[in-house]
Image 1 (cartoon, rainbow, N blue to C red):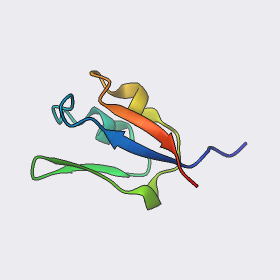
Image 2 (cartoon, helix red, strand yellow):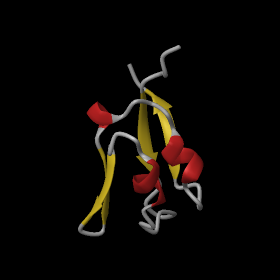
Image 3 (cartoon, rainbow, N blue to C red):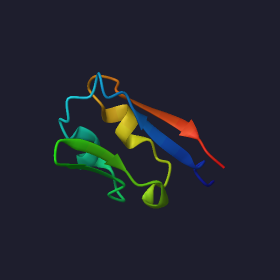
Image 4 (cartoon, rainbow, N blue to C red):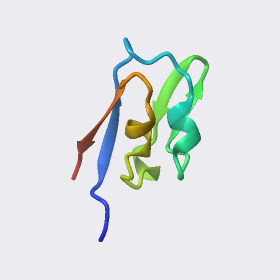
Length: 65
């Protein structure tokens, strides 16, 4: 069973750049660089580990085509 393709959105007001999402992403689709959160859609496999791991609920997954 294939995972659905998702885009990960960050609520920048909630996110405090702790790096939990970066640590669990198996494809390195998220990075924190220069105090900025960045997501790379082309690397994402849709596992949503980042969303489940975020301690403050700053991430959401949105299905994309």
